[in-house]
Structures are given as structure tokens and as C-alpha cells.
Amino acid sequence: MTAVISQFTKADSDNLRRVGLISNRYLNLIIMPTEKCNFRCTYCYEDFAVGRMKQETIMGIKSLIDRRCSDLEHLQISWFGGEPLTAKDIVFEISEYVMALVRKYPKLRYEGDMTTNAYFLDYNTTVALADVGVRSYQISLDGPREVHNKSRIRADGSGTYDKIWDNLLAIRDSSLPVSILLRIHFTVDTLKLLDPLIEDIKREFIHDSRFSVLFKAIERLGGSNDESIKILSEAEKEEAIQLLKFKLIGEDTPSSQGLFSQPHICYASRPNSLVIRSNGDVAKCTVALYDERNKIASLQPDGMLKLIPGRLAPWVRGVETLDAETLACPLVNLT
Image (cartoon, rainbow, N blue to C red; front, side, top):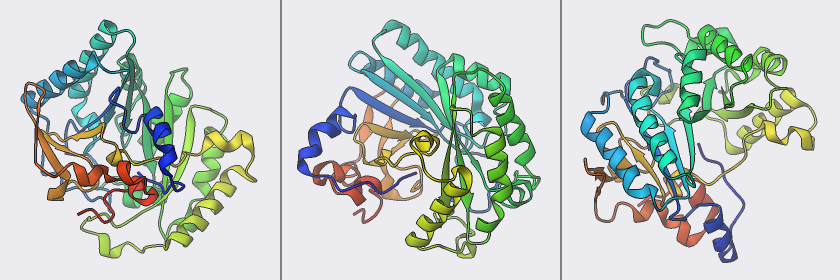
């Protein structure tokens, strides 16, 4: 996800290095262990054609991390899909390998996070993932049960809300050292139907510092149902988000700042951030998966990247220009 940030100046370049935008001491790998999914969300842009990651790609990821670890200060592994927990064994295999490297390089800071539909994120799985360093999650809800179950449906057509909600409550009732970003989707049609969910979040999660909230309008991202999605203008989106925030927290106060996700530079703008698809393709963006410009390299079993000439530079052009719009989403006006 991306958000527009304030305009940068050339004087900000040193600070950008400091926060890791272009630091060679930081590496973020967004790994897709499978591109299959147990859900068929009505607005999804993925085609689920690519299946589980093969062993040669797993070997390549391990080798890549192994090659880089001695020079890194900060390694971030972000799990994506498809639904990554439908290939849970691959998540654990790579995560356990990373934990062994962390023990070998004690100065290395490691973070593991996951974008998941949370259907399989039960308590025992969350405990096991925390043990291998995966402790931060982004989980989407589309509204209260009757709204959510119309759009975030299983492949067999059944609803998903109750199981997700039960898993969230189990995490809340635990003492696990995790963080959960609840990504609350809305459309023109569902915006006025979110109040029961907001009340439930206020009652169950708002007082737990491990939980934060992001309100996000559904967009047309290339899915088969794009034409049926009614689009809000940027001004309407912002107005809706401010209204939803007010409903959740009331008047904005300093104590509520941590509840909401903060704007940030898109991962695709960062030279030190790579998407490893389950077929071994290396990309920059998890949205433009089927855009040929998005494939910048192929991962080899020895951890080397076979680069495609000219493909990387357009994605990281914001590092040179420091243009806010480009840093927020390099896919815009990509050449």
C-alpha cells in the first residue's frame, strides 16, 4: 500500500539514507511462497496461475540471504501471496534458515511480517510464527459479517468473517509480542455500513497497543470485476477516511496517533526492496504482477540475480528526483 508524502528536497537525501531508503545495510525481501489463494475476493487482481514455490527458488532465497547477511544491519522478510499460509511449510523453512543466520550474526536486526487473510492464522500458528521472527501482520476486513462475507469469500463461495474474527480475538487474548494492522476496506456502497465493525473494533481492540487501523478505499487494480467497482475521487476518499477515523477515535488527540498507520515511501521505490515471486521471478511491485516492466530479474539457485537490462532504474527513479508522487507510487508514469 502507498500514501502520498510531503515533498522532499535535495537536502533530505542524507535523512533518506538514514531511514534506510537507499542504505546497502538494509534488505527487504517480499516473498510469495505461493500465488494460489483460498479466497476469491470480488475485487482481487491476481489470477492464481502460479502455484507453490519450487525447491530451486527456495534454495535461491536462502543463498541470496546468506550472501548478504555479513554486510547487513537490518533484514526484513515480508510474506505475501496468494495466501502465504497456504504454503506454511515454505514460510517456516525459510524463516528457520534466517533465524539460524541471525544467531550467526548477532548484530543483524531481523523483522518478519506477513500480509494474510488470517483464515489460517490460529493461535498455535501465530505462536509458531512468532518463534521464527514473524510478528507483524496486515489483515483485511471489508465490514461487519454481512458486508465482509459478500466480498471476501472463500474459493468455495462460503463466508470467512467468523473464522478471521475468532483468530483476531485469540491473538488479543494472548500475550504474544505481535502487531496487527487491521486494514478496513470500504467502497461507495459499503461506506455507510461500517459502523457495526467500527463499534466492534472499539470494544475489542482499540485499547490493545498491538493493534492499529488503516482505512482504505477499494480500487481498480486490474481484476475481472474492476468495471463494477465504483471509484471515489481523491477528495472523497480523504473525506471518508477522516470520517471513519472520527467514528473510531473521536477528536484526534496525541494519544491516538499510534492507532493509525502512517504515510510511508512505497517499498517499490526502494532499491533495497525486492519481490521474489513463487516462480523465481524478481519484481518490484506486488500489484503490477502481470506487467512485463515489473519483472526486473530472475533468481538463480546460487542466490545471484540475473538482471534484465534497463528494468530496475525506472522503479527507483524517485531516489534521484525525490519527487513525492514518484516515491509514493513509482508505478505512476512508469516508462
